[in-house]
Length: 259
Figure 1 (cartoon, helix red, strand yellow):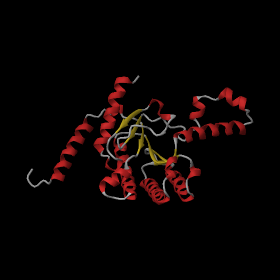
Figure 2 (figure 1 turned 120 degrees about the vertical axis):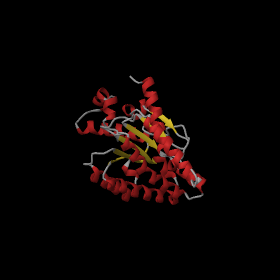
Figure 3 (figure 1 turned 60 degrees about the vertical axis):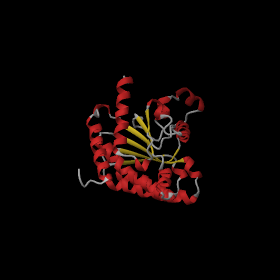
Figure 4 (figure 1 turned 180 degrees about the vertical axis):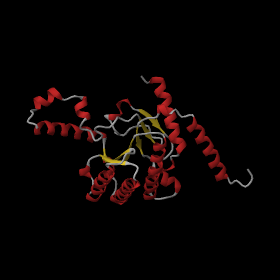
């Protein structure tokens, strides 16, 4: 192994370990829908001596790599929490560049040709240019057969449930129904039909990076029966082996507690 640098040696060991984990992965136990809380961009940037914008950009670059790993393991739906409703409280000096990065990322996902891009979130909260990018991406990828990629932009779990109930009430009102009619017919399935992810399977696995161990309102309704995996690594530094470990952990829990 003469001539190998420390970096090359580390990469070699990492590659061998990743292949070992992947080789032991049971593809029959792979989650069909994975939700991801992309956390730690700013802390990664601070630890790396970079700016917040550079951290968000590094996190954006990681998304396409992550989706490639999902495609290799037969995942069918991925939900990426890119911007929460709470993020609108951030200073404009941080929020505006972040929105620009999100727009560029969504355009890139649409241009890739492999993914079906779907926006989840409150569109009205977003500036007009961001709304246009999201709508155009959905239209351009509607006929694609690959992974459904839910881009959660302007998303909040409580807001989603409130919007679903509002949509349900308006639907009944348009059909001439009264509040009493709604009260008699409303049920879990009715509300589910009006969620941002209507028609999609609920997430089997929710991954949160950066070491935080809370959902922060992510997919509150849909994650009632999800498994959670909390990873210490900041999102821009998330590696394939971290992803494979999450799948391995999910498979072990699924075998132990499932069906």
